[in-house]
Length: 138
Image (cartoon, rainbow, N blue to C red; front, top):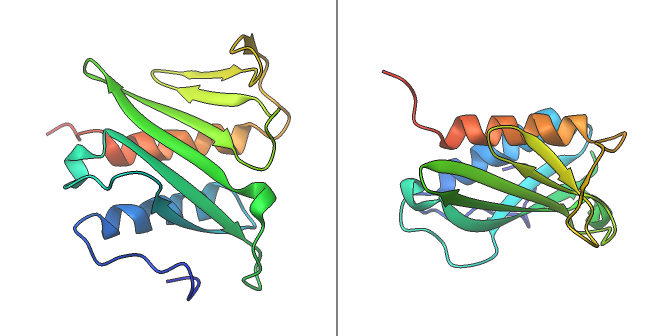
């Protein structure tokens, strides 16, 4: 575990949370990340198709960076897996919806907008999350 106070519970979902934290570490450098459920925990990884996660950021020394925290909502619409990524430290920051492709939306209105200058790493993170949660081809 990267940080002692960001312990991951020993549940069947613990490997998923650790994989999500590692994906955030890779895509959102130089911060380190811990992930936890903010709502009811799914009973299995397969049930993690309708859940909400908080991604907490820390600097290299372990100090909290709450302005870089994210909320990730994972849900299905039919057979499609969708993600909604929100920056918790900035209520006006655009939201990222990621289904078959990335769509940035204004937080105030939900209208589509251009990708922000620092949006590419967030899109990369969402692609990694979708790869982790999508069934693999045989």
